[in-house]
Image 1 (spheres, rainbow, N blue to C red):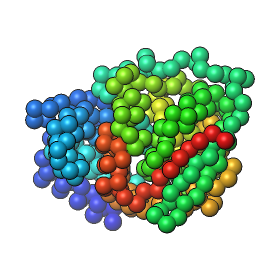
Image 2: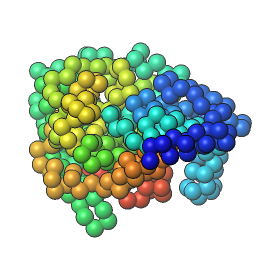
Image 3: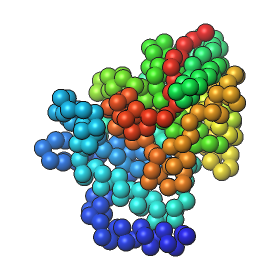
Length: 319
């Protein structure tokens, strides 16, 4: 099977013009497509570069959502296809999920220079607090997750999570990536305006500086996703397994737990819709993957149109 997949991928590269669009995935970049500027972001941990076209929503405001989505440039599609094909060559259709998919940035941003400094509340200035997360698992089923946030583990992450919960950032947010036994990830707002401020850096990135890890990424803990040094923003994942060591080794990759699930791990978290995550796993990323750039730019419209079965957070509040 691996040999067949390699042959298939080679044929695809030889006969598809997608190979012309290949660029390394480890730095954000900007390209031109038609008359519009297309902004590209990279997800180094997944070896993926994807594109969004900022002007297409306004340009197609009178059209329906599907038309707006389909107006994304062909060059972006070729770029995505090429990155995934290279992934097939390297892995022989064996998906590698060594890291959670990570945050976004615009090409000209220097995230580290805009990172929030360590002047945020220290662990001694913050008490442990709990967050109640009401979840819609599917149209007929709901559940509740209680998270205990531990400032003594990671004061900066704890303060950021509290800020986002109080802002209502996570209300109506989808669990965009649920990989059984690995992670359940959320943190892209349903409101594009919030994503432009917090994720797409239109008003300057609000990334956190790194802080030392004090706890392991074991089952039930929560960590912020990261795409490198000083890049934690809004995306969070729940560890569905003990991911600190083999085979995922998240402890050594800059993922710092700041909270833990104290209620709802088995009766809610375990029941989050993993249909798309399973598709991603089986296809090696060719299907089932939420495009984070499009999700951030279009918000709820993109996710409900193309991924209608995703479980989502109805409300998150401090209790």
